[in-house]
Length: 196
Image (tube, rainbow, N blue to C red; front, side, top):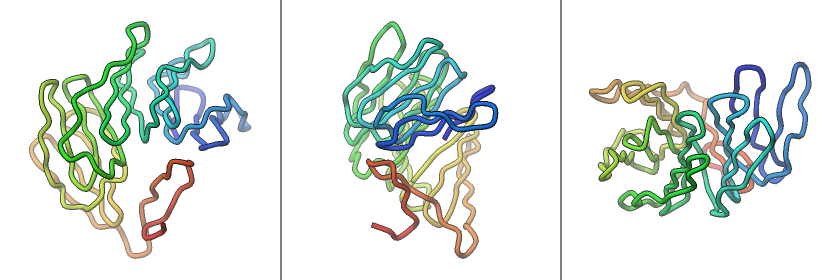
């Protein structure tokens, strides 16, 4: 789910993209997507079975790659990934592939500030500086999701803890008993901690 200036957008798996307009949910597109992010209501990206961009006129398919997550970094620019593949998409310039992170198994999430600051979450955290990947262990297990406002403000969600990167190091916080982070499957179905 992602909120723009006016509308709220939801990636609903095989049910497509839904948009909350004024006081109700509407079907916006029948796209098989499990992740959505944007920078404005007329600059929204969706990933799943393919990578899609929505401008003021509608949705455009940019890649047929099966993807797990997407993060928009600026007007007309986004990063998306699948296991072993990180895509950099720029409207009007096309889609390029970044070198894969080391040991990119069980990829769950992506966050990016720019083409020289891309983060990919697995059981470890991989960060691309535009030339190479570095790997760190935030010590929260599988990194299920990420969010940030810049290179020195990134939040990671694990199954039983969250971690904050402040530009110098990680600070971990345990989640209360009974609270768990949800993860997405390729169909878009959410699973609670421990579910198959």
